[in-house]
Length: 343
Image (cartoon, rainbow, N blue to C red; front, side, top):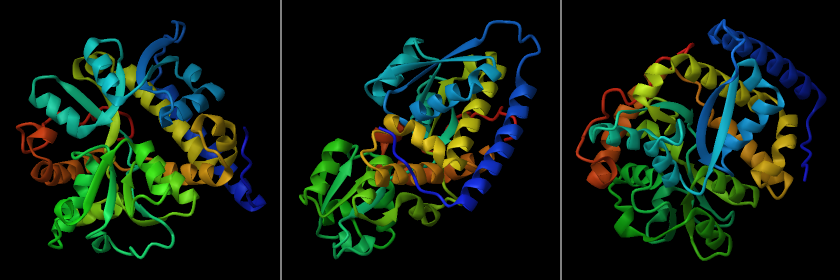
């Protein structure tokens, strides 16, 4: 089902102009890193991702605009049922790249698996409440029934706890916490069974489209925890040795996906085309997905991302413990991949 999004004529002209500029600029970068020997067949890269995730949206844009062909790439998407399946696929060598977080990468490096990370998205969850809720600030969560997606060591939940501990509030003991799968908790929140929920960004966007209110986005809490900006927690993860042997291939892949992100960042019409892939049930939900996705596009130098990751690692290690980070109390050296043009 195609969902039409209304735009003013002036906005459309400005967006299309910006899109053309960005695509031209990034296409030039792609050509700069594409091998001269383009007569070879397209080089294959296997990306293990969840079928309904945002990478599927970007891949649709890549293919629709022929960005993969321009970069001499054949991107093979391996559909997964869960993030854990992706980790298994990477370890088994049946995937070249997966999406995961730098906490896991650092932990794996500490245990001997030399993986590395490159930022993909800074979209984080939020604390959501019904529009009529008396909860206005995070302090108001005390004594309430809070649905937490992802379990006790979910990053959104740990960061929320860490921030409130600065105000002397131990939310884990001062609220009733219900853990569960994101879609289940979103449904329970909609039905009124929960006073508030902290969920993944896309479920929060869907709640927002249904009239729920954001008490706070997790990204709003990061400055108080030592970060200087929005931090990309999720990124492309691959084996370091494979990366060193395929530097040019990875560079072309990253630049190609950046181009797709910029198209989705500037073109509302593109969202109409990928609407069926998003699962959005109505125009309001699609707009919420669009806006929150755009906010989560990483735009900072990799050195800034890594510096903030190091700051947050200490916070997360202190509250999540060994179950989250393993024995290391600092981000492992080499966790972040630095060899991409423009970084």
